[in-house]
Image (tube, rainbow, N blue to C red; front, side, top):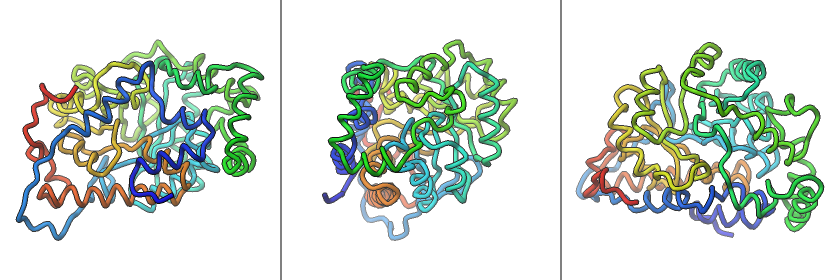
Length: 388
């Protein structure tokens, strides 16, 4: 099929992936209200079109956490993303490098840190969940240091996994034991291209960084059971001291939706934060990123670097996020769909589409540099009356 935008990548991914994997990427929690808000609220942000300005030279470059990059986007951490294509995270990190943007490896990736580091020629970001076993956590952070990861993205909005109905219905989490294995295998056999390339030749695949803690268990049921049992729901702000004792580089807190939490992050010395509701996959009914971002940027944007994710489906959406106050934007489902649709080449094409769409959006709003994008580019925007 012809790929013209992120929606086309999504459709190509739906056709290629077994149902349980597609639903795992595409779905949200509960009734998916926040998932829809993320997309709809961002699409509802109006930009000011300006004319008769010299926009012949557009510069998308920026700097985040002391590193220059080609445009203000990064690939967000996605659990099990490597199941979407053979050794998927290794393909994605190469695509990100070629585009000059950061890649973020999830704690619960399919490929382990060592494999992704071997595939990369530049430092990448690493995402961390707080795990009960602090010894294992210390070892994982040591691996990130050894891999020369350039930033740590610490996810703070997942003390417990959200309730995701689609995952129950598709068999990712809803059918335990042999029944679940049979149900997923049947779905995989309906996608022979994926089954051959990933399910067979992509092994060993889906345990990644947590394989040493799994005691020889290898199934998806075991994987999700381990997550439920080992994510630390007792985590507090005091645990940042432990993270800081093991990690000296830039620390970015992911999953901030409230200005008071943002102020706490700034006071405790975080270098950045990501305004995020986990792609609508945790607490359903919370604010979209579009609504949460402006007051957070106003509260702490002069003290730390504010990034954002959620609902971004185009380069136009990236410009909208920047105008709302973000200094950078993380792409999640966009690269997961692209990886499933076309591997490394798919992710590279997706990033080229984002870049091209950003250039057009910037030209038509009359700006030529990233640091020129701000609230002045919004038409009649009032944070208090943003779409709901």
